[in-house]
Image 1 (cartoon, one colour):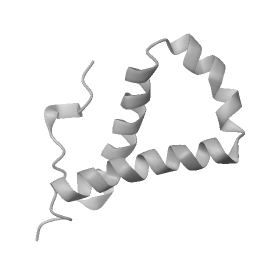
Image 2 (cartoon, rainbow, N blue to C red):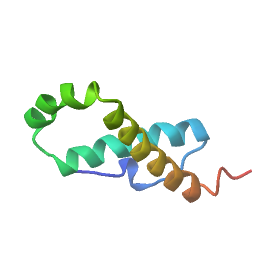
Image 3 (cartoon, one colour):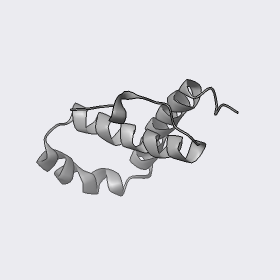
Length: 76
């Protein structure tokens, strides 16, 4: 499983960086719980939980911070 698409965190724009962060978060969850049927069965529980959604957003924010730092907060 390729956890970093294309093998790099470098992106042209912050928008691309945000999209990469979302992908990284999804791939991390897939690596942690590789059984798609289990993930699908659990989805209704966390999809309706404000705390779970907040934590998911936190994971994306951490991934975005990592991508942003790798991009030197978008070079000029």
